[in-house]
Amino acid sequence: MNPTPSDSHIPALSALSGIAQGDGSNSPTSEHHTPLISVIVVSYFTGSHLSATIDSVLSQDFSFELIVVDNGNPNTIVEELRSRSERHEEMRLLTGHGNVGFATACNLGAKKASGKFLLFLNPDAELSAHTLSRFHGEGAKLTPPWMLGPKLLNEDGTEQRGGRRDVLTPWTALIEGLKLYKLAPNSAAVKRFNKHEGVAPTNTSPVPVISGACMFLPADDYWSIGGMDQGYFLHVEDVDFCFRFRKSGGRTFFVPSIEVVHHKSTSAAPAYFVEWHKTKGFVRYFWKNFRPDYPALFLLLLSAGIVLFFMIKMAIVGVARAFGFLRMRNGKLTAGKRS
Image 1 (tube, rainbow, N blue to C red):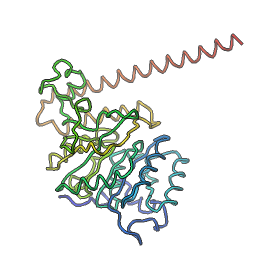
Image 2 (cartoon, helix red, strand yellow):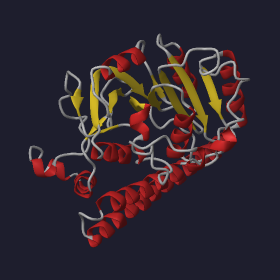
Image 3 (cartoon, rainbow, N blue to C red):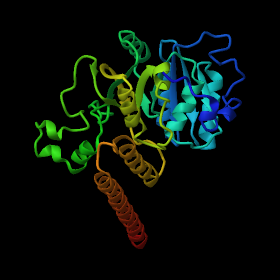
Image 4 (tube, rainbow, N blue to C red):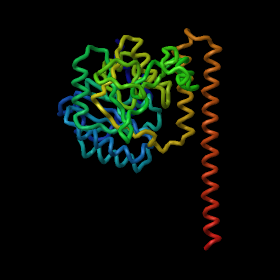
């Protein structure tokens, strides 16, 4: 098991020692007891759901601290977060480092965490009552290293894609991308990466990959593989973490009795920015983890396909926006003529 990395291994961490908000009175390591769970929320232009996420954490009936990592929000949002951290001793704010990427921000929060357990929670996900105590109870039944993920729900109550997944390989990526699973839905050779459309287990069950939108595990287990790979800026870091965790002997479980609503895509970040980093993340993941097992030519073709898909998607988005702009403009011109 690797030790927790020193501050020098995490960009800007040494500078953060004086940036965590408050005078120390709200530090869980001062005169208050050390929390069992550290909830880490990374925020970047999250939108209106951030407040609800924070509320859902602060209302938990368990020993916890909430660490919000400001990854470059507007000043108005930062001031709101600072004000809340001053009013709630359980909440701390890490700010001032800019947008260092999601994976690096997760590591920043985890390095500052005091809890024995870590819960990584997206800023647009909401915990229901007793979620922390239930996560802790499920974990108490297991022998480390382990990691738990809840049943992620859409706003309409349906199970969300990504909450339980198979190992992402170049082959399963091809199956998902080309929808080959529709040709032989019952064939093991073309099984899907995403499992949300299948029958969900009723009990806690092993699953290769869970979502970083809500991920619970012991802090020692998190650092045993070095935390998140900071080579990922946005997206795919959770898939990579699960892959490395499993490869190192860790066990990952899907807990259907714990449900978390994940609103998804609430960030005001430009679509191009998000999709480009997702594209780079997938390419990095496949070359990093599968180069010995797959021919370089196959990975090159797959990478080219991923980039091409990104370009087509962005072109479609651009055309749709241009069409919408023209319709809006023509509508205004027509209204002006009628008046």
